[in-house]
Amino acid sequence: MIAELWQLARAIQARDPARPSLAEVILCYPGLHAVFFHRIAHWLYERKLRFLARLVSQLSRHLTGIEIHPGAKIGKNLFIDHGAGTVIGETAEIGDNVTIYHGVTLGGTGKHTGKRHPTVGNNVFIGAGAQILGPIRIGDGAKIGAGAVVVKDVAPGTTVVGVPGRAVRPRALAEAEAWAPLAERLAFLERRVAAWESFLNSLGTSPMHIGERPPHRRAEPEYYI
Image (cartoon, rainbow, N blue to C red; front, side, top):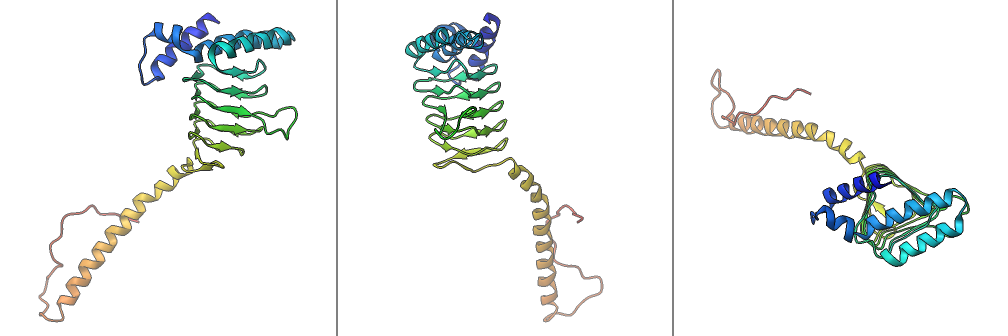
């Protein structure tokens, strides 16, 4: 566990824009402390020592301001930045390299039993104050904007903002951008047609000479559709 926490401290140091020293991360970052206490609490929880597990988690809550239920499953390199007011429910699952800001809730809706909290994939970013509720899945690489309320599954690579949460940049947009070269070719053809129209219109007032070509234009790449 010590090796894992050392790795987490290095990951936090690399991902925090403030670029803190390693000693600062280890001694002053409540997110790292909360993960440390959670590893202990989760170990007790899995061995049916529920009371001791909750005792450790409550101690962590009072010391760090971050409440993580002992039953939550957390992957590697979870970076909880600032952290105050963050709540992670019992059946929540968090993947690797996730970043969570303060005031985030991974909670339930009160309408489900059993699995009732979110599952968060790898490399997910969750902004301050976001509320992710219910047994939904947040896909790998997704970004949840600050203050968003998310109650439906989020596709991998999607950015979600607002209340209720709505996708503003799905990964499918990158596929849509593949049409950009075609649009450029169409624009090129439009310019060619306009040049020929201008040339042909000029023939109505001037005689046509053998070998005459359209007006000189800037050299452009030839496209083939």
